[in-house]
Length: 241
Length: 241
Image 1 (tube, one colour):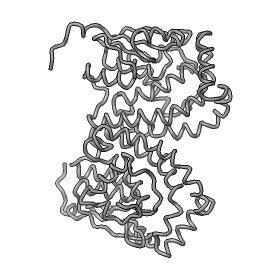
Image 2 (cartoon, rainbow over the protein chains, first blue to last red; image 1 turned 90 degrees about the vertical axis):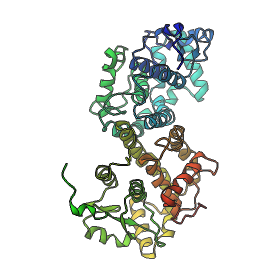
Image 3 (cartoon, rainbow over the protein chains, first blue to last red; image 1 turned 180 degrees about the vertical axis):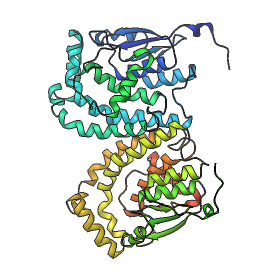
Image 4 (tube, chains in turn brown, purple; image 1 turned 60 degrees about the vertical axis):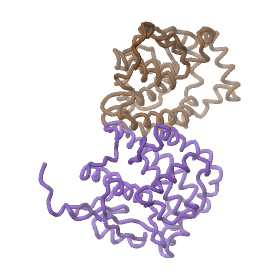
């Protein structure tokens, strides 16, 4: 292996998407934030609103999250950032279990994107503008109404009816937790941060409850919020946390 | 650890559900059959039709699959059987990756039950009676019409429309395979046998194609059918295999 270059001691920089109250809200940014904390990497964070995205472009990225690595290279896809962190900082691993850990991550990441995210966005989208700056609100509402072809109110009109579907979609996570408290087993790892990112996004942007207080997911989420000196809990939330 | 008892050298016995042509059809039985083969356990198999289930009851079980273990104890839930096999015959493991492997199995098993199985049964149920004995056909049609509250034809009437949903639901498996060819990584393990059981059930009972020949799942299924001297391929199928 090549010797580490002096430039590698520069801390990485994370361009992070935040609310009007400077609370990080993006699920994909939360994935990266938890991965950095897991590895004990002290990254510099640049909190930006949607309207300040030109700073991401100027730094060489296309969207949030953008990481400028220790060598000054921009990486702007959360999956690529996570892979980079695992390669550049192997210990402690984000993927315990070797091959099986990577396969489980790939499975759960895709499942979260294709099943969980579409359900949850149809439950919380209408609430998100309320936590944004006025300028971001205008952008967010216009861009999402265009993307979904309807008002945010209409997009979320049946959100109460989605509870059973979400409960079923979350059930595989509950079963995985039986192996030792976390989705990855006895200690949290990237598969936990994947689910956490999506639930934390809902937690900081919407008062709409996604699961009951007596749900095992609630116990798990409380444990997740306590990790890394309460990194997640420190972010203000609608739900009591 | 206690010494092995002489009775432990008795081969286990599997009560297996079969079609009129003696082809094993149950996804849960296929899970056990693949787990036994994975561990190189030579089990005695007793092939039975639905109408011969009284033999399962007489042997101490409630339903298929029933395993009589090496000590003569009946175990009649596929998850319990798989756990028993892993404990009694630890090597080679069905759950590579330790904690992560077990968590991944629990996740994928539940996902298969709650997402994949309901979609696939709505695509193939109407075809299943055609592979059963006349006596089984009458039982199967009556019991399923009662369970679903409609004719099998009505239950499967929209099956063509379910293709996009199934494609999306299978996508996490495709992503997991990127880690090394199989869902578990570079070699197949229990998470592969979980998906295989459900697709094999469809393969031996229905000519309705669930995915394209150029789908990566088709490549994986071909590899799965070749395992253990073609254990799965030996079972007659509607689709060319």
